[in-house]
Length: 336
Image (tube, rainbow, N blue to C red; front, side, top):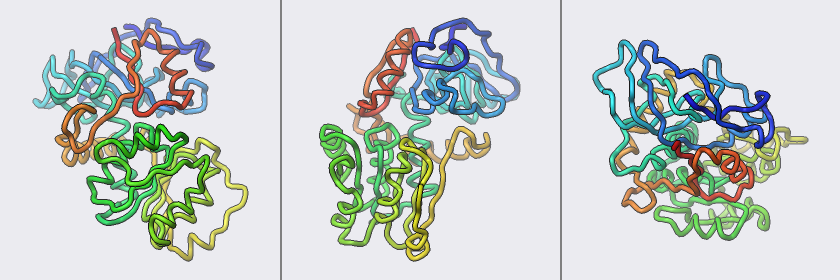
């Protein structure tokens, strides 16, 4: 089969190319899927550059989320699945390819209302947002949340989940006026938007919440946002850290507000979690949200938004698009 490979095993975007690799075969409890579309994530760039270790046993081919058609069932697979079923799902790796093998627990039947690209834009993004809003953030009705990198796929999903949870203040940060205006304009979008480059978001949070601070912070940025995140949190606040795009080291940190405000700070990963944990999370997401999700032109309470769809032959251009950090929503590649 064909797959996106990396010349020399790692390197710049120019090292990406489509080559031949063996087609995988499903083991017991696994399913072979012919991929129609896959989503790009920032971890793909890190992995391409040699800075993201692949989980043990996972394919070294890039990509963790996809949509496609079942072509072969392994032994022991339940009666829930059949050849020809349209599905989407997540994997530890291997989605930048014509075929992928995944555990049956990691697949979801694709609703007919979703296109291949829309379905591929959901798994990693929505599961990550679900962890932040519900599993670790434990956001409750009438609480407030601060969401960084809000124009990313995860950020957009988290904003809408916060709306569905009944949050009072959903404060989104991004780097441009265009992104912020868009985040407030979409159905079930942010209630407030802050430009972190030109505004002090912790001061804006205090103004919006009448000095109380937010109950939950979802952070992808790290170093540059740490002090203001701590200042933005209210009593018993929870911060969930997904990434550290500005760096992971905090040169100096005052622990006093963490103690005084009884703050809880949690790191969140998904790809490295056990198959059992991932399967349980997928089951929760299906139960609570799948019937509420549609494409951007649908009528779902929660919608998936795609920035741009690339032919996978243009995978270098797709990675450059993500590296430019100008996207609002998901970047998707279709296999043709």
